[in-house]
Image (cartoon, each protein chain N blue to C red):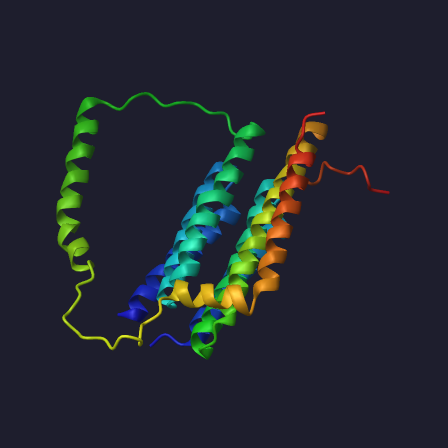
Length: 167
Length: 100
């Protein structure tokens, strides 16, 4: 089962990465890059690094790629042409299919809600989540790189503002 | 059974695709995106090793790689915007002010 998920996710990631490099229009490159980020986040979850996967989604797919989109829009590398509204039958057909897909997937979503089976845990032996373990390490052993990273981000922010200023 | 080698091969292929993008594309924005792809491949290597060696350092380092990559993308895109304002293009073959 794990092998199947790994092969599906890696196929998605590889195809998206190839599309990033090979397609002509920058908008397509950015969208396939977002797809690659999502595939990689899935692979991180498969490797039991949930916190890093969520940070990848929030920072990379959510911030960095949106920055790319802004710059592409700013440089007018794409001429925006808004398509016509679809016909009514296509609109309603799409709505019915979306609701049908949700109804079909509802049992799958429900199966993933974590059930707390009635186990008694000793008070004092807790299972730490990935976030807690990383947080503990980041604030004790790796405190200096953490603070230096914040200084680096400050320097990058100032540099970006100064470089992109209008004269 | 998914072994470490599976992840390493996938990461190597992603890195190679990123290198191809940096070498063969002329649009500066796409070059920066291929650079991000290379950094993501390295992140995958770090996380895979962290899982298969049982150490947490790989994930911490991957977080720092993400920080550095985000900072570098911000500055790189600001440079691209400045170049576009000056030259009117982001084609790297056209930016030859420092060519001798």
